[in-house]
Image (cartoon, each protein chain N blue to C red):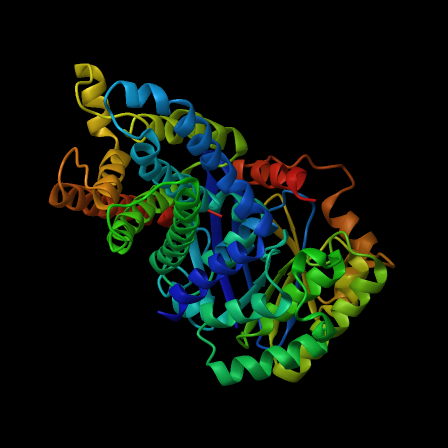
Length: 248
Length: 261
């Protein structure tokens, strides 16, 4: 337990010490929220969709959590290059504990980032249906954070350089965001888009967040929770396996 | 403390280590010397549970590193060729984390961290981030850290690489002192012959994966009719320059060095 805790604590310290990083990483989602939220607002309203800001804010919270959690997992790459990874891998503890500490730490950081961004959305004019919807939404924030921190760990255990990192960003993380229904409703999509969006793990996270915060569901609560919990299990197992295969 | 018998490691068709045998007594400082690519790091990796031998026997404190991995890991400390500190944490936090990873009880941990940081002259800087440290200070911290869990054996893989003579001198003084006060067995590799001669009780010279000579510095000099250990080393290993056949791990290391500031 103490091993998991100390590695979790390390992630927390790193996060709280990098204030600039915190601001920078909120900048991109904020741009999406403001530029797209207010830019597409009139068109969306004209099409009968209501307030676009209300619609997309939960999606952008999901995006913040997605980016933050995947990055924290991929930080294994940095620890590999700066050498710290070796220190943990030759210690007399199981790799599973190390992996779990890191992943939970990364997930917690992502949850905090999600919370900060939710505050920003409230300032921008987003309003949840109820104030108690917020703790409910955080159950989904936590699920998204764990799913993608575990995915990040899996990827971070496999890739070895910056090129690999760019590849993952452009061909995995960005598509996961754009195809998740964070920015547009999933109803009435072309069948190809329909299939792709349904395969995207973030789709269920965004749906859960939007449902919790604004009462609008594409699927339903049970389905979102079950699918996310299942994915969390799968990715944590994959992460544990890949992490156990790292050679130094 | 360390017993190695007919140890071999083959990568594909390349024989990195060819049936080497040696023993290191408890409390001894043993230097493992050899040109680049001679098999030093491969041997250390096998001794420290990081690599499976192709064949042969290894015993550390009577245990097989591959069978009793965690037990063996508790018994040794290692300072790698490349740094392995967390630069975003303070000196004390790095020590603390190591203590937890090696199951050192809290009270012992607190005492020992203070003792070691003071010994290695880092106590005043304990709350500074490692990224603000000089190369010599980082090295000292790594060695202090490797002593934290009171290992029976300490592996030092070229610990003084890139340090100025003052730092090197100071570092060996500390290692020797801990070897004497705590009875830690030390297994080291270095390219600096003067260091090996100064600190090591016994020396083994490895070349092309084979041990070509072992004994005290005086014995090696006598054996080769040389007046310095450097002369003995060159007499035993020849003076041609070796091109290390870089493994993918080495290439990664090079890559990492480029990125490191």
